Amino acid sequence: MRIKRAHIVNFRCLDDVEVAFDDVTTFIGPNGVGKSTILRALEWFFNGGALNDDDVRSGADKRQILIDVEFVGLNELDREKLGKYAVPGVDSVTFWKSWEDGREKMYGRGRACPDFSPLRAGASATDRRKLYNELRAANPLFQDLPAVTSDTAMQTQLDQWEAGHSEMLKDVDIESTTHLFGFAGQAVMTGLFDYVMVTADLRAGEQTQDTRGAILGRIIEQAIDRTGADSDLAVLAERMQIEHADIQRKHFDEQLKKLSTAMTSSVSALASGRQVLVSAQEPTVQPQKAQFRVSVWDDDTETRVDRQGHGFQRALLLSALRLLAEHGRGKGEQGVICLAIEEPELFQHPLQARNFARVLRALAVDANQGVQVTYATHSPYFIEPKSFHQIRRVRRLGAGSRGSVRVLGSDQASVLARIPYVKESVVKRQLDGVCMGCLAEALFTDKVLLVEGGTDRGVFSGTADRTKCLLEDGASVAECGGKQGVLLPFVVLEELGIPAMIVVDSDQHLEQRLSEAEARGDRDGVKSLQASIQDAKNWNRQLLKFFGASESDWPSGWVSDQLFFVDPTLEEMLGDSWPEWIEAKNDLVGQGLGFNGKDGSTYQDACACAAGTAPECVEAILEQVRQLSPPS
Image (cartoon, rainbow, N blue to C red):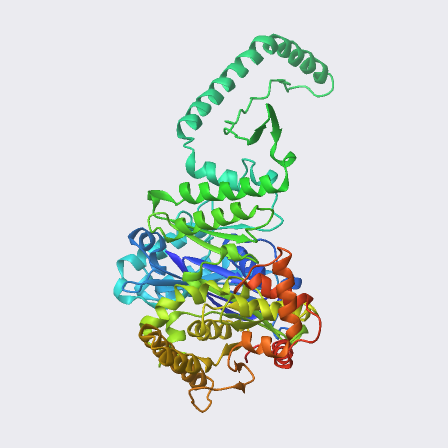
């Protein structure tokens, strides 16, 4: 059983947010938009905690918080334990939890007797039993229900009646009178689905103590069998109690008899007919549960966890999560643990962060492990290019109490729908290859300029370095591996709410090169150039078609606010209109600070330090990128 989706209403900054979940779900977006709030909303849903009016979204029409979560993939154990909540023939189950005026309520949709709903949703146990007795007296169908003296007994009788009258059940909302969730205790979902959250400020010292709710406590609960020790400790406690009583009798009986006699004699002078007895209090020895602790052996010295550096503490915490995922999958190893991690990259060396992302993803995609993972991150290490459909970009619209939060995502089907004239095989190949790789950094920016290759990226980045305009506006330049690779990342970025612009060469110069090859009699060159020309024309037309422009073989200049064709190529245009750039590039190569040929870093450095003025169209493109706004 895994989370399929969550719907959150009026929780802190979240007004009305719907979120789809995968095996791995990665939340990205700027600071303060609500990524962590989504995880914290689910933490309250699953594990509880005190809320107050401050947790209700400012400006909400109703002072109520409502969260519902849908689960899919129910197995036989899930159905057996969920009982009436698991409707036969339906592969999903949904639970709702609300908070209003300090009162929490949780209920699920299931098959039950509608007449029993008030008995499960009454304000108090006394009210529920009163309604139970009234129902028994008024309705012949329920006259065989026995009298009960407790709310628990009543709920048991209701469940048993429904089990024997399945033909009379209907789909109804069933309010829970007991806990549905919780890692420990008698909650219905315990061992089936558990939600474990690691916040950015979580302290490893606290979480590596053997206490209920701490990560170490949860690991020990699942990985360590205390049965034998608990039995032996119970025997020890019983023996200690007996021996304690024997010691008291040995040392106190005679003394207490004398004291009792003396007090009786003394009190008889004031009130006769009674006897005073002083006796030893019977000892109560409770069995002590075995406790465990974690320490670190560091350079021949044993130290507390909180004496270690932040990086090691975080690594230890995340390693404990991995162990929890491996050992804590519930009874029968069929349960699921959802690991919700806020900023998993925090205090981590890049290699450690990358390895941690790899390990958790491997756990999540392995059906035998029973692990679901969700992050709120600012690190590209936790983005898997081939799994872009698992990315959720959180976006905030408007400001203040009238602002709203939206969670955007994309997948292969939606991308194909935007560009049906591109072959599906081409889309799949490019999504799994170059074009998604270019988005690792772009996904974390506010706007993106998409270019063909590394030298183009160098030109625009270097020119922007002269004024810092891209950095200050939260923009980036991403190379896409050629003209054929720019359209798909553009679509993905737009669907995630990130505005983008495309700059490509028109490549009309290829016709001149073809004429020269024909004049030389270079058959192989002619054949290669003819294929390149056809390919360039094809992609030029596809780009024009996507942006709704008239199709032509060799477009030039601005086609739309988000598409510019450089004629014939960016490099030739630079050479013709910015001679100081060529001088700067040659100087860098001569000093050993750059490389001959097409090198992106050399082009970037040359653009950044060249004298003179950058070409007008390059400056205009950068200004247009600055003006980009998120798609509506």
